[in-house]
Image (cartoon, rainbow, N blue to C red; front, top):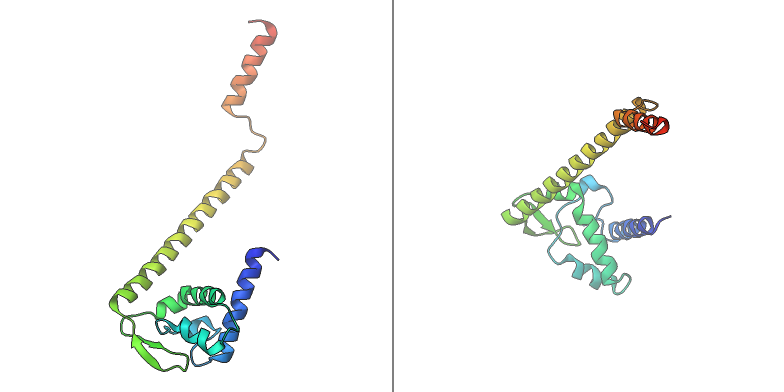
Length: 152
């Protein structure tokens, strides 16, 4: 497995552990994710008392909160939850706007990727159609070579 794959697997494992330990707060099912309390990483670290490092916690929460479904749940006045699933604050208009921007950026990036893939596929198909054909440049080079060979 690649380094990136191992890293992603470790983060998924960490999220799974968080969901097992704090089921009212975390879930492995992306569609069920709800906005988390600001600073929940401190609560997680205190509750786990060194079972995971701050770096592991930060990475896992970054992945958890960057999820499309999580960002879609970040609408203005939606409740934020603590480790016990209790509402402890709400999403502000600025936070909701930030979530919408991140989703729009992700959608634009995906659209650019799809367009690039379509262009690459079209170029490959064009190259396959033209395989074996002689280009005008090739004809000119062949004519120049013939002229040079006969001394014209």
